Image (cartoon, rainbow, N blue to C red):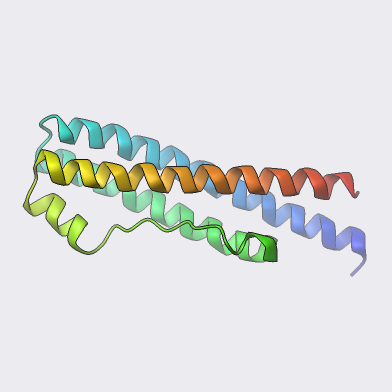
Length: 133
């Protein structure tokens, strides 16, 4: 495979990464909106909707991670992890209250920051790769 073909392939994987990262960001923004509603008196249904959006975001981040691994060795340090299992998930539903909702909201914010950082890194590398064509 020629250098040109290698660059084109890397660009393709980078673009796929960006697609899933933007979708994850969108899902996290929705989860955050539902999270604020949950903090201010949401209840079980709101918690379940928020959890659904968090799981949707996790699925998109998993897909983005696949393409990021293929895209570049330099992006291995990108953290796209959002914890939707364990005590916070269980506690959010069982002990549905302001404190637990605020902890989950913080996790959503951290995940969104990680996704935004990954988007910036991928975009920067894509600019460099396109300049090589």
